[in-house]
Image (cartoon, rainbow, N blue to C red; front, side):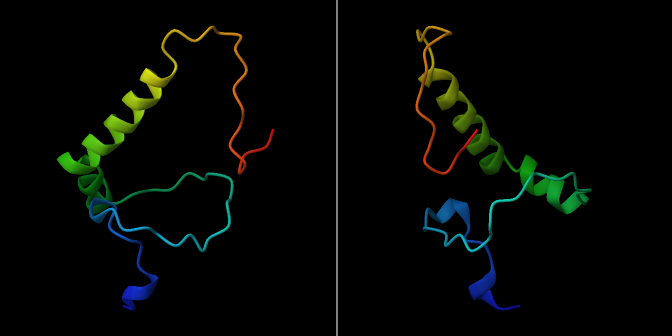
Length: 75
């Protein structure tokens, strides 16, 4: 397998070149290998840390406060 086309390991903090276009999420059946990889303590900790940082970023903000969208998002 060509290592140049493999995703960058998120644990190395190396920048990943995004070559895919943004698409609508789809449902996929995952294998036990995928599930074990997600449940891996490091991966799970990164996901939980990200969610907690999102939670912390909105504490004390009024519910009706408008926030700017990222440039890559549209309504």
